[in-house]
Amino acid sequence: MNLVIVAFAQLMTAYFLVETNRQGLPVLQDINLYLLILSTVILTAAGYMINDYYDVKIDYINKPEEVIIGKGMKRRVAIFFHTVLNFTSIGIAWFVSPRIGVIFFISAFLLWLYSNSLKRLPFVGNFVVALLTGTAIWMIGYYYQQSELLVLTYAIFAFFINLIREIIKDIEDRQGDRLHGCRTLPIVIGFRNTKRVIFVIAIAFVCAILIVTFKINNISLFYYFGGLSFLFFLFMYKIYVADRKAHFTQLSILSKLLMLTGIISMGLL
Image (cartoon, rainbow, N blue to C red; front, side):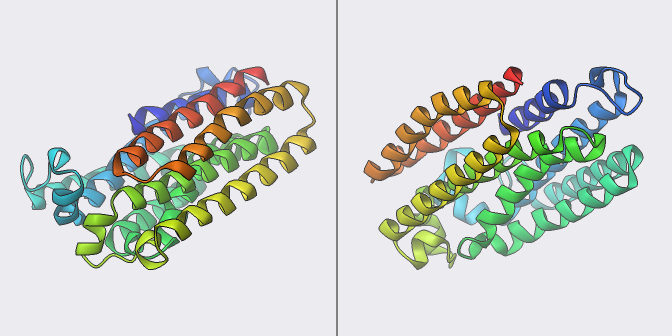
C-alpha cells in the first residue's frame, strides 16, 4: 500500500504541477518520469526489507502475523535481495540523471542507517524517514526544474504528515521496542510528553503550510487546505484522546488518508 502511495504521489506531482518536460512535451510522455518512479518504488521496497531484517525480534512482539523474514524468507536471502534492489534503484536513477543517482545513493545509505541504528534513537529516525518521504516528491520538481515552490509545498506536507505518523507508530510499537533496548520518544520522554511533541509538530506544520500557501497565493489552494484542516483537526483530536494500541493503529491509517487527500488537491492547481 505504501509503495502505491509513493508512486501515486510522484505521478500526480508530475502531471498536475510539472506538466511538461524540458523539451516542452507532456511530462507523461517522458520515459524518465516512469524510470524515476520505478527507481523510487524499488528503493522504498529495499528500505522496507532491510527494516524487517533488523526488526525481526521486535516484530514478533508488535506484529507477529506480519513477520516474513525468518519465516517465509531466510535472513541471508533478504540481505541479497536488499542489495540487488538498492543497486538496481541507484543504477536506474543514475541513468535518468547522475545528480538524481547521487540523491538515491544517499537515500539508500540513510535507509540502511535508519534500520541499523537511527530508528532506535528518539526522534532522529522519525525525522530521517519523514525527510526521505518529502524528498520523493521534491525530487520531481528538482529534476524537471519546474513549479519548484508548488512541489516544495507538497513535499513539506508529506514531511510533516509522515513525521507525525512515524511518532504514532513508535507509540503503537513501544512494548516491543522497550523490550529490545530501543530509545524512541515514547520510551525516553513518556506517552503523554510524546503526544505534546506531536502537537508542537502539528503547529509547525500548519504554520509552514500557511506561509508557503500565502506565497503561492492560489485561491483554490486556500479553499482546499481550509477544508482539509477539518480532517486534520479531527486527526489531532483523535491523537489527544487515544490511549490504546488499537487507537494508534487507526491513527496510522488516518494519516495515510490525509496524505492521499493532500495529493488529490494537486488537481486544483
